[in-house]
Image (tube, rainbow, N blue to C red; front, side, top):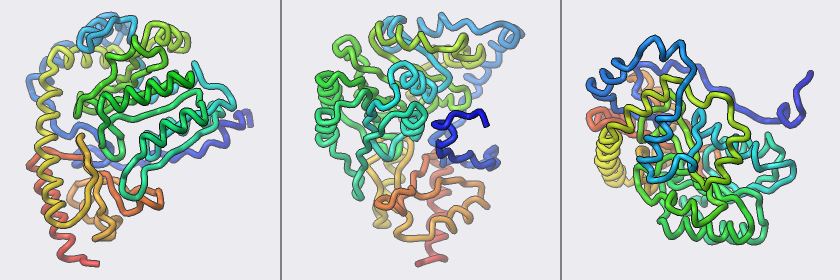
Length: 358
């Protein structure tokens, strides 16, 4: 009755209430390798009554993250997950009728916030061979002159990575058209090539990051933006009183002090990904050129994916449904597990294919 029209007209899909505890979760790009007892013990030792009773103190986390990234604290702003970092950018800069340039597939909230803030979305899609024409995308910057343009590096649906040079070219072109360039580096720890070193060279650059992926903190919602001082000051205008919980801050600080935990996980996922792509290659099942902790696979070419999902669910394995886009139908993004569980999953795949040839 009181809802704003632009909010009422949003099309949102409610999360399914699937029970995921105790499952092999290959559906949401989470860390699937358990943290060591040593790290868990360090976190437990830091849990005191003040964690619950005191308002959060975030200053030390700013210092630790700035040191880790090689920037100043004035170049950082934290938020409750990268999705709210993105929302704060829209709140600060995007008005009704502004143009926003977006890739598809990509993180869904870029499109949701464009609708929410009544912007005009200009979309460029990957083709049926999972190629994305970055030159054409930059040409749209010149022809459309959007207020905001988004480039995921790596892409969160395909896993492909762009070089530092390619991303800088995109940011440079955006600067010429007075466009804010969001470089979403949610998965950057897996492949390198960050453009954080360019934040003072280009005043239109905003790097969006999260600790949900390689750092394994999806349940604690720690996201942040890195940019020049003026942009960060703009974003502080819309930040809430408290950005993170005391517990999230403490865990993030602990992992920054022990960044080897993240690096070892990345190394393990590199090893598992090579194994998985080699196996699919031997089966003549196509995969994307992913560099991160999932592979996107053309399962729909060799099986009924819904039947396979039901089959492996009984064995406690969960994967996503295929992409809904017509040119990408049949392709499924599969999160990687530790090697032992990944081999079990591939055995289930073999068993299903043997008994359910199409």
